[in-house]
Length: 325
Image 1 (tube, rainbow, N blue to C red):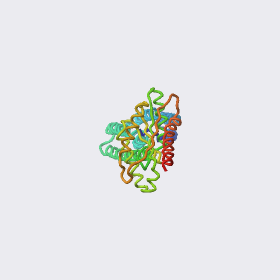
Image 2 (tube, rainbow, N blue to C red; image 1 turned 45 degrees about the horizontal axis):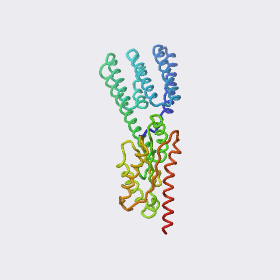
Image 3 (tube, helix red, strand yellow; image 1 turned 90 degrees about the vertical axis):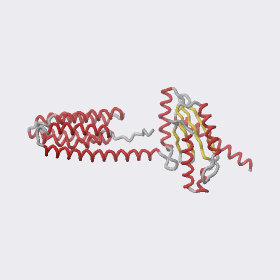
Image 4 (cartoon, helix red, strand yellow; image 1 turned 135 degrees about the horizontal axis):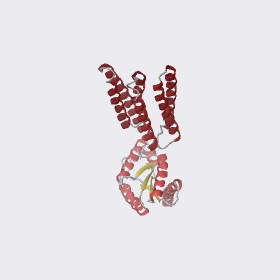
């Protein structure tokens, strides 16, 4: 569900650009000192990094970027292994920096696998050149750098997931927020129009929510919203999602649910919610609105149709209350 993109493309473009500049500088150094075999390898690496920088700056499709990044690092890993036996001192700087590159650019499982593969290949070649102590030092240094890089990448990924959850969640109720509803409406409408399946939206508003806050306080209001959300989820199918606008109105997005189904769901929810005694509050007065997607309808009009029914019910309830008095 949480598919909101926290793009790393600008950062990756900058990283690839810096690597291109570093490869260019190394090319100049190798040419100056006459290391023409290393010059050729760094020219190839420079071209690869430049292509990756251009691709990541132009492309915004995460699926393609993921595999281009994997291909880029695999080619770089092969280029690092090629001159390792002939020029180990000039190649080890790429070996040590590789775990950091892989952890920053690739998903963690891929980065771990590629990092271990480079370590195994490097040690297999260096054992033919050095005795045990230099190889052990290389292995320990590489492992330490790799573990630190993977730990940092894991912590960074966890932090991004928490930030992403906070960005799409209403802190009072625990449901998804109104902004995320707008995004999901656009996605589900596009999917519904493509698959020719129905899409419905059900709105339930707690009419006296502001009075609950005024009388019982913010803590009781938050507790009510969380209980209300849990009660809704217990009555829904897998795949149905609950949203809250922050003002006491919940929206339920119902993929592949025709108008008859949403009417039945509305009646079932009304019975369940009206009969329930809520802690600290008692009974609730609810207004309900629903809408089923029409052909060529946009998200704004679709949302507005469900919301207008809620408003009409609230206005009718106020008129009846005024009439009774």
